[in-house]
Length: 252
Image (cartoon, rainbow, N blue to C red; front, side, top):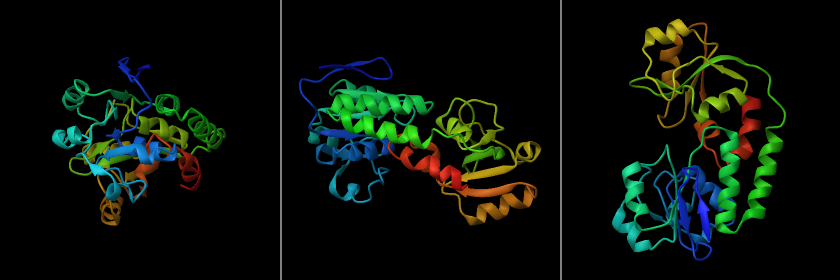
């Protein structure tokens, strides 16, 4: 069987995969929700959903650094990754030995494409279709406009989610207007943040773990802004976690 990933790379599988390694937390959770937990042999240290998985599966490293000798010992017949989250050189090294399927996610449409593609490659297309239908239903009603925002992903230096990111599309879905016009994840000086004066300053729980102390510090320089901690998984995970995102956005 031949499959094409989101980078237009072809991979060949003689049979349905039985030994899968996932290098992306949100896609790991999706594989479990597709009923493939028994076929997962390796995950990253950041694959935190479901909670028991890191105790029952072999840790093959992080999303950027891989324990190649451990991966070799697991003898995977499929490795699943993502262009943004994974290290290119490491992926190329793995692809020289194993079938490596890569996603490339910018918006909800890409996410749904990824879900059905993984359903096809793993023989779980019916379950994948049901997951997609549920996600589409939860996102079918547009949410009320909330106001302008800046979404911080890192503290020192301060970094924000800009255009051409999945987070930006999720902010729009949630009813926010992202004030960051630059692409990707630009650094921000405090003076720039003050000049932007957003209605909301959203502090993500990941990758930097913002806490209450950061709210106080930032509120002092932005007295007219609502500074708020948010669940980063709801804005940046593009697998089956999307089943819960729309309801979360309504409650914000």
